[in-house]
Amino acid sequence: MIGDIPFVQHDIRKVFVANRGEIAVRIIRACRSLGIDTVLGVSEADVESLAARMADEVVVIGPPQATRSYLRADLLVRAAKRTRCDAVHPGYGFLSERASFARACGDAGLIFIGPTPESIESMGDKITAVGLAAKAGVPCVPGSGAVSDPDEALTIATQIGFPVLIKATAGGGGRGMRVVESAEKLPEAFRSASSEAESAFGDPTLYVEKFIERARHIEIQIIGDQFGNIVHLGERECSTQRRHQKLIEEAPSPVLGANERAAMGESAVRLARNVDYVGAGTVEFVVDDRDNSYYFLEMNTRIQVEHPVTEMISGRDLVAEQIRVASGLPLSFTQDDIVLDGHAIECRINAEDPDRGFFPSPGLVEEWVPPSGHGVRVDTHCHSGYRVSPYYDSLLAKLIVHAPTRAEAIEKMSTALSGLRVSGPTTTAAFHHAVLAHPHFREGSVTTRWVEDTFLPSRDQHLGTRMSSTEAGVSA
Image (cartoon, one colour):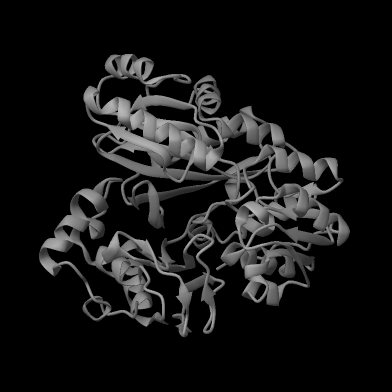
């Protein structure tokens, strides 16, 4: 499914992988395909991980706690220099969107495989990003600048009209975000969002924007090089989510027409060009389900968890292309070269129990047998005997399928989920199987609140308080 990419010259010979889990495995495989050696920085909890087994060299950077290992830029840079690496790939999460980390890599003579620190800074602050999007002529949701206290937020919310969203300016992954439906609920929502933002990002700053009640979450994958070439590779539909956390992603969107797709792609490229963007990135939009009008949401200045669905329909290896671009080479394709083929769906297989509020389920994986077959891809760091750590994200694998049509992709994913065998931790596989069987998902009418407002309540009503893996037809 992934197209051939020419070997990188000798600009980058060795890459330091500053991440863990499935994205570390993904980066190592991309480097291997380009003839590049890898060094993996691991915490003490990940010494025996699959990524550690695959890397050419492994360096222990600290204890299991992320704040003492994967979030320590100084330790990562020092390890990369000590092992004579040429470049650092940050993956996603951890330090991937920290301008200070990208700058520290540059100051140490290391190539940061990602955008410039300036691009990360401009897009990392949500208020600045919205201003830049508006300047680029990209539609934006009505909202405010930074808001200092609940009283100011209430005044702005009253002007905009309820419901509103309170959001962290440095936020991501739904943290520091609250939907507020009335004036009475705003003060407490403001305080809790600010506290959560301070804890998650070290920055309590919030802003207010209009909440679109029937919203779809659609994002555009872009990539640019150092010669000013910027290309988009179509959209991904990410509306199947819970508490702003994506669960299932697919490409293309089942609701966008060709004109809407082109308009959103052009908007994304225009914004990226206005900030001299280099590398892979994603411009996210909220789309009003009533008329498909779209508004800028944010830009993620890194590779996304869900990048495989774009790879499957475009035939392009985005991680290898990141490395090419970082080495100073031009993009290996133009906009006219991008031909999207078929339909792809990705399910995030997490070690979580959906029947206990998606509570984490760490522990020993006694058996791990992933599905296989034509059009089935599994990006994972999991294996039989792997112990799911309580210290990190619960993602075990990304199960991706590709088929000529959306209906065929849904059936292929259902079959793949049925073929996944996991014993030990409870996973979200049975949950995904049930979602894919729901008529709302099959007809493509899911919005961002559907899982919480419709699917979970109806599932509990019809299946009782617990849906067993046997009922879903898969091992969980």
